Length: 269
Image (cartoon, rainbow, N blue to C red):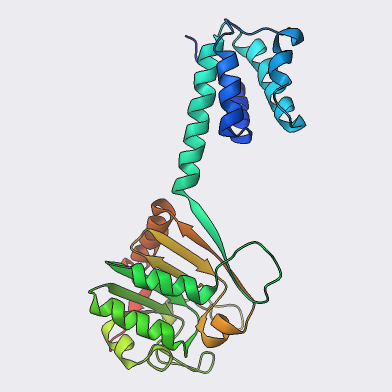
């Protein structure tokens, strides 16, 4: 069998992505009895009538046209197999990369969203091996402090990356003041080496402004929220929780490299 053309593969993916499983099964069963491509509209009319949405009919009609032009000898059964395989792969990929919206602020939508503090507590509590937290500011979130101490008691390696670990004129509260002495002493605390920060012409330095949490390299939370009481309770904050190993590992390994290259440095207690 000759390879499928890139154009045909693209249309197979489009149809497999748009059609729900039940409708795709109907299409596949119909195609299984078709010996090869045909441009006869009459031949496809019974099937098109079973596709209630115009966008589905259009996508399938486009697929039929490309099939007839690019791979006319391809059997309908083979095309049905390709559609089902593509649909399965798309579903598995979506399951592997499950993303949730996380929101703190006024409730204005019926769409269920989880709150920032709730997600952070979950990530800390489910961690069994490793937890990484990065934040510009850290201040007065006792629930997070308690959860971090419990994680440390479980033997979890906790890495905290902060703009400043001791406090300065920009961020007055360091890790000890923000999360408590026990967390500051028992966790691995890092900050961006000021000597390695870029500066503008006026001599102003860049800031560590990211807000990230990673649990066991399996779950990744990227958010606008600092680890502060205001961010947890009063501010409008939004983020995305990624339940997936690939991206979580990628970001964790990025932090590993920042540490290995001593761009962010471990701070002595």
